[in-house]
Length: 294
Image (cartoon, rainbow, N blue to C red; front, side, top):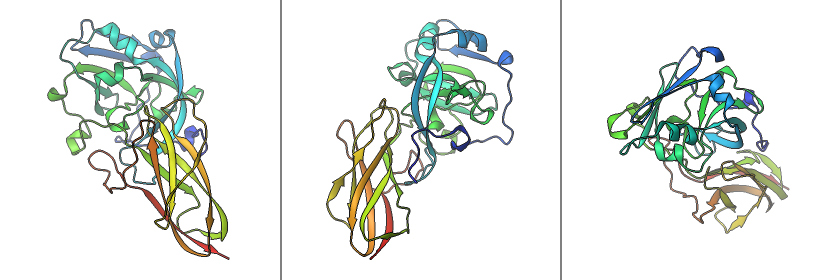
């Protein structure tokens, strides 16, 4: 069926590089912010949770998600905004990156400007109203709307070095992925399923679409290469979440090909050009086949 608005913690996708997940007691956690800054900062867990709390619905998705794939989820995240903390550190002129390091040694390079703009980039301590599950980064992880996880989502984060992209490499960029990882617009058909048998006549087509920190303005479905038909969109609280959509189609008996595409809040249409996930995310229209029986 269609993805529920909120992805449960136990159903949220996982991408890990370490076999053993770090276990850190909150009392033992510390984040060091250093490098090209006016003043080094060391934050304990108690320091962090004493700060002003920010909470928001934010959709995360993986750069390795295929067109129509399931490596995407939406959750209610709670934490502290990174922009204020980095401003206290005082990044020096010329700095453009933050090299994040996890307790397990994983690294990612995140654009400094993104961490300090108006988006709700945060050091998260809770997921869907509960302390972060260990597998999702307990006690503290980074959440950055609008970037793929491989350049932003540092679980068990313990170190942030303010630096320059030209001076660093990170785990996935060492393996051929792009230095920059802005999320690409995406949409998928979840109902009906690919290869489904459906009754001829009215068939409800539904799914989700996303482009975090820009937002989705429209979703369209095409049947058998015909005209693009506008779907109805559910309301969303911000531009950092997926949007659920639905459209009632009239399908005559026979085999049909359905395609979906999204249009972002700035009027740009999702490309139909097919690209692999490497080096910076897949593109193309999610396409399914169904058979309508009279």
